[in-house]
Image 1 (cartoon, rainbow over the protein chains, first blue to last red):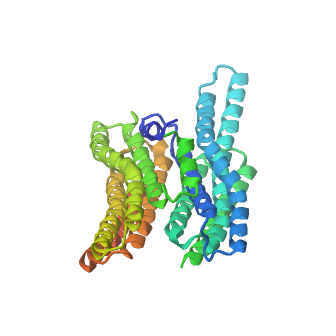
Image 2 (cartoon, rainbow over the protein chains, first blue to last red; image 1 turned 90 degrees about the horizontal axis):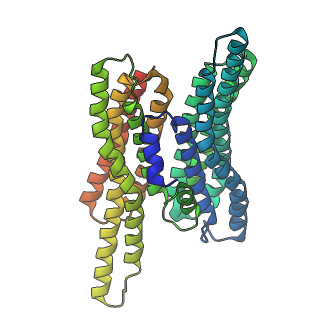
Image 3 (tube, chains in turn purple, brown; image 1 turned 60 degrees about the vertical axis):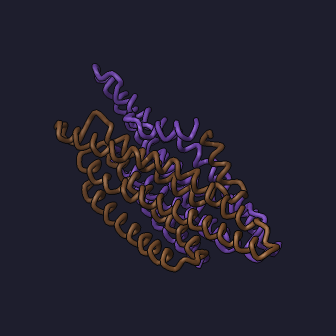
Length: 200
Length: 200
């Protein structure tokens, strides 16, 4: 889809693509900027070690970037599954039970997708410190923007996790997911601060 | 340009598109999400006043969204102008003077473009409070993500303003631009907090 059309899809009154997909876009964009700096021929001081460290970081960031790109669509699909489940018939007790199960399964998927966006963005931030430490000094602001975008992805996806956790009946899962969500936001902030320290 | 190609353009070692353009993307995406919620048929409590307020907000947000979309390309063009200026001949005194002027003009444009990204994103945040107050409660997380994206655009563009201010000789302009940059970041944070209060 063309970028201008994607923006219009976000702007239309249709709830998808919405905030969950937009958070994944932010993460994919941040990871892409890290790949840009890691791929620049010029490194901080020009040593072969810096080039090797940046190549190794890029090899780990690229699959995270690709995963985040896929999550843009997966978030909309998960939302559609929840909407479809709510529209299932509820005439008989069997239908009611099947509908309830489908809503729970859809809502759980709609929780796991933004959790995955948080995971991939936090993991990309883990490698940002390597890019910040070894990358071209002329690209300092690019690394800084990448960090902001990945933090934005973590926070935005976290809001989507919260909304969906509210609709889940499995208390054990809710407790685990809530713990992981808080842990991801906390560790993402730590990794971001560590990378930003390298940019000073 | 297709979205996947745009991500690859950000990921390539070519410095453009870079962090300045990525900040404008974040702003355009955040403004688009505000437009989505403002356009939903369902409003907070369903009154005609809410619909009217949301329509008025959308009419103000849409040109900001379109401006942010244009700034994605304008940032890359400004960078290219600076690079072209540095490549001008510097054999004679006239050539040296012309090159110096071109570098200053290019760097000033490369400062104004991210300042414009900050201005448009801060202004979109001013209208976010209306969307947060009157919008569909089911879209609370979408407004929350929009706020994060617009704040990310302000911070990311601010890093690009800082980098370019360092290369400018006109001390009066530098002082004014630095003041405005700080004011934009501060007021953006205030507007964001005000909008977030409405989401509680």
